[in-house]
Length: 459
Ligand code: TYD
Ligand code: MG
Image (cartoon, rainbow, N blue to C red; front, side, top):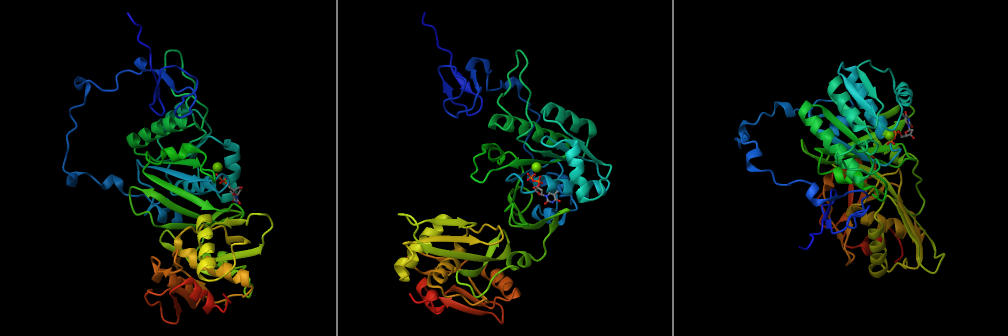
């Protein structure tokens, strides 16, 4: 009788192979291939099913438990439309060093100061280090507990034993399941691997739901998104927050990318100082404080971040081509949109920019990738290339099409109001744009060429 070959299935991606290997040929994870007949039946026998669960009218579902509890850190609560919901799991993503641990420590301190028991699971820093950081932030309330551990079993036990109402796990990449004991099948792999991150998150999510604890997981994301771990969690958690900004600048932006308990448009603004993060009421002061006027290449743009308008300065610099290929570099802007804008300037506005090195950036560490930035980018480049400075009170907002046309943008009234409030009373907009607030001069333009010409730049 022919021997049937044993197939192996990857417990991570689910693909099968005939031969066992140390690494899954499909997803590249290590030690995830398991003999298929050892995996057990995937379909539960009908006899084993829990038949007590029946559909019920949606209108009779109790919603009292889903009420958000304010944490006491205003900007954090604003983004979460009120606060953290008991039993919910929130993932806070951001680049290393951006301030995730600081923000969450402040949230924990605020909640503990209000008399609630909260727990910080610090898997990256020792209790000593966290205490030192907490000292910088202010008094440390006694109901703030800390556990410095990396083993997920220890973490689960600590949460069950100490019964806190809020748990922060910093970070999900640093907790892991220990090696399997004999006869046990467990995901292996180093802490931070997709398998470990998912397995640990799964346990923590189950714990949050069963104990009605609000849980916040920290996830590091690198600039190029190369760390797949936290991204893989986005569909498992209730809320995904993104903490952004430039490490070299003080401004930090907190955005909800996904939120099951409210809208996602809110933006929280913080400033990193010596005593932690403080709310920013007037971002204009931080973003436009050091602006030089009367210099070619700078223009102001009312950019939309979530539902808030941030008025930022956009700068461009052009130099003669240094190498055989023209160089383009952007900071905080979309490189593809810059290339397109340059092509439009060359084809439709008669500006010879294709043979120049072009650098463009948004000052203050803010990222603006919306098409509404096109017109401002075009004017900044045109101004830099011609050496003609733009008026200090001028702002521009509009999407540029490939035919050189300037289009209207979303939420224009809000952008115009904020521009006017900060003293930018002349704004270039698309021809079909509605009127702005009184006292603001709208300069409606049909094409980029018209905008360039209106700025007194020879095309
Ligand atoms: P951290 O919260 O550790 O970042 P993350 O957890 O996202 O990796 O802190 C980031 C930086 O913030 C760190 O380099 C030190 C700085 N910092 C301040 O400037 N002021 C402060 O009060 C604190 C606590 C940190
Ligand atoms: Mg940290």
